[in-house]
Amino acid sequence: MIIIGGGAAGLMAAATAGQRGRRALVIEHKSQLGAKILISGGGRCNFTNLDAMPDRFLSNNKHFCKSALKRYTQHDFIALVEKHNIAYHEKKLGQLFCDGSAHAIVNMLRDECEAAGVTLRTGLAVSDVAKSDHFRVSTSGGDFMAANLILATGSLSIPKMGATGFAHDVAKQFGLPITETRPGLVPLTASASDLPWMSGLTGVSADCVVSCNNGRFRENILFTHRGLSGPAILQISSYWREGASLTVDFLPDADADVFIARKKDRPKADIKTILGEILPQRLADCLLGFGLAAGPIGALQDKTLRQMTERLKHWSITPLGSEGYGKAEVTLGGVDTAALSSKTMAAHAVPGLYIIGEAVDVTGWLGGYNFQWAWSSGWCAGQAIP
Ligand code: FDA
Image 1 (cartoon, rainbow, N blue to C red):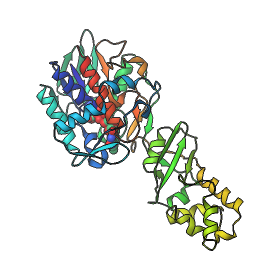
Image 2 (cartoon, helix red, strand yellow):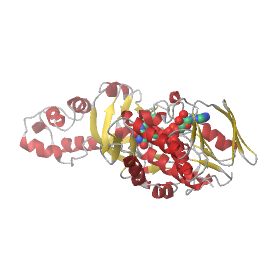
Image 3 (cartoon, helix red, strand yellow):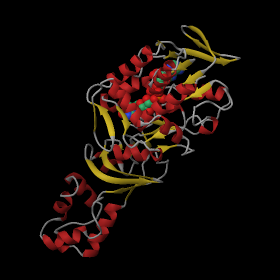
Image 4 (cartoon, rainbow, N blue to C red):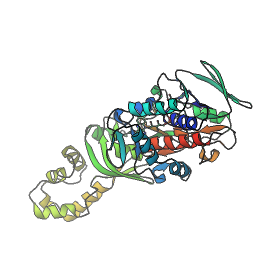
């Protein structure tokens, strides 16, 4: 079997198939294996999530990921990490990171592959894939033939790291459908009217609830010189569509009467001071500047305070766009799951062809979910190769 792509999913598939006694060749076009693993999680690789449940994945078919995630779970991957004595910790929200460098994860996968007799070839550019009774993969290092081919070349995010739409192109060549692709887990840019106040807050972050379409996340948002970022925005970006508005709750722990209670306690305090006790002061000052309220809280009517609270809990922002594939952690969409077996990742219509990882229309939340999909889908294909 040939696996094109020596990233997370490809290495997992190769090791799994090799351990079953299958002869596996990995072809990677870059000089290095697992480049995205190395830069992930700020260099410490957020390699899975303790809560890697199917409802944290986006796809045209939300049921597709269930089988693979159940057959090779986050606990299976954690056991592998522990077998290799890699120290790790939970940072927050079930997110598991290496204590040390992400190199440990790439070394672990390489060791697993080598122990299973997998041949790893880096720096080979693939020029063509063809099929008669076998697959022929033409590369800068010659042609390779195999009865089974796994496409594990990831997707379009971060082209400067070598990301390509190769898997989609080959899938199309074999007549498989591709769902619409777009950048996910990506910062959003401000409209011309929002840019002045947002860029004025560059570097300010606040704990908020952000919602859009069916997504809702409580995490920090970060203002930038181009618009919005931070984990809450990266998460919601996968649910956002051009033209849609985000609703930001700047006061996630407050009820409608939060300021009325404070007015009774400290009527002389300025509303800026009061709001600055809940939000970063620069953000509080900026939001109040939208005509919400001014002066001592005792001089403000209860109605005004309730209206202000309502605005701060339902702040509407319509982003201009996203920062695109150059800044996106993942690509939404990909090879249509309708064309694949959810158990084996095999293409129904093309015997011997398997597609795994980010190339498939399955995208996880921020927080280790995307690697878990790579491990789970890669393991399933590695188990299935005849
Ligand atoms: P992946 O991209 O890992 O591997 C594909 C491989 O195929 C690459 O090595 C590529 O060079 C190779 N390739 C491409 N085209 C080829 C061709 N034509 N011929 C040969 N080889 C080719 N996820 C997560 O769960 N936790 C995290 O902490 C992070 N952090 C993170 C940070 C950043 C900056 C990014 C960009 C992404 C993340 N991710 C993440 C997402 C995660 O990296 C991603 O979901 C997985 O790497 C996808 O695994 P794949 O194996 O499908 O693709």
